[in-house]
Image (cartoon, rainbow, N blue to C red; front, side, top):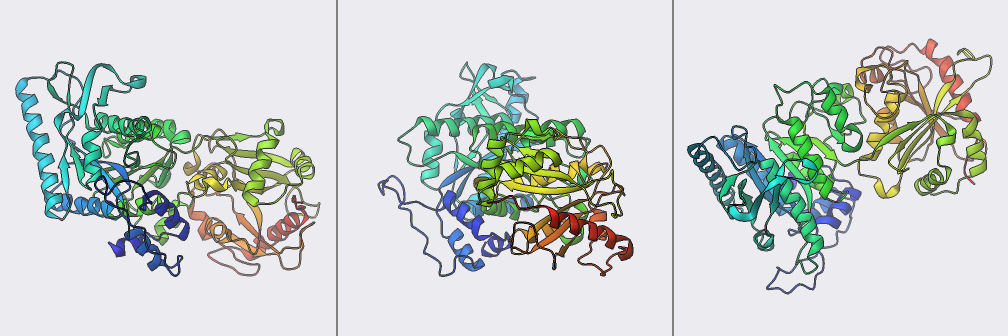
Length: 564
């Protein structure tokens, strides 16, 4: 378990967020109601990997997570899943498990083909529930099978017509199991209006649990502990949701607010991944009831360690803003079994008219992100003349500002071809670490250097990836800690040694992303990496490239600082 925690590579910020959510808190709860929480010892060096692991491991269950185990699985496969489930509990998350099976294909309606079919299905569900509970107990965990009357099935449809009317009758048994550190194992069975036990869809059961646990917590002020789930984990045999931008490999991360409809429209893996879209719909419904920091993970039984990594970091296995070819060449664990992380996310839109920009909201975001005072009149006067487009995440929770910059008549570019310059790229500090940066960078790629590539055909409110790609350049202070992140996503960078930015005493580096003219997504970007003038790498013609680099250096050096 310690090795699995360290392999998740939690940063100091990841560990702080994790401990805030899952570490035990000082409580006035009586000892006979809840075991007294112990506060983890203060590490001598909180940034060291070992100290981070010690803090994470020294926890007691503080929150719940919904886990749908969608079989069939062999005993060996199920044992691997069970180990991951027990690890989650050790790390402070009590899994509430709902079992499912691909062969059941249950529709949550009170009628079935025959009484024999109904009894046979109930026997299968009972067998799988007992099998799972026995295996958890055999491997050192404590379980509590839930009673069959935990769910109720109404005669109508659910909220918004999303499935039948299923709800949790009482949270008492679930709360008791969590308090005594037992893992609830729930069968998808409900009592209908005639008080008869009927089988329901496991998806409907999970949705009812998400709604019941979230609303029940807000309605019960005397609750001993917060039962609101912070994670939804769907463990299956298929793995994550395939992406056309990754040659059929799974999406690393999905922004529900802007990608849900597009994924449905472009999905073509119904044979190999028949439950992917249903899992995506389940995740969207459940997350609508849960806090913004909650996430869903669709993961193969082949990746049990992903459960631990997701719990600790709440991040995808790899950054989705990195090109697929880059990930394939640098990470061995990128493949069909890579999990998909799903978050509520934020809607993305692209503005091309300066008059549509909300200057007050943009100013608040920039000043909060950069922690400096903006020279509003100078910045917006210049932007009104040079704005190419502005990408906005949510209600100005994140922005990318791209301008058209011109060079003199001696440039190697025609006068009618401006240079695309990334003037500002910012996310609210309170949302950093929630994936907004990756979603924003993906939209930026789709509107600039990735235009025309199959990987950029996304509906983000802009060109939808259709058009002629363009080079994108930007500058950053040499001391900026974000430069490593920029370097990983750029084709190269160059330190501006002898040029000073107007109105600034800082030294800057120039970064660039080359236009993907070969229509192969990220592959060209890392074939054409160039670190400095005169350094030829991977087939870059230095003599053809240096004039462009000189022009870019002139442009970024001429742009004045916008800070007071």
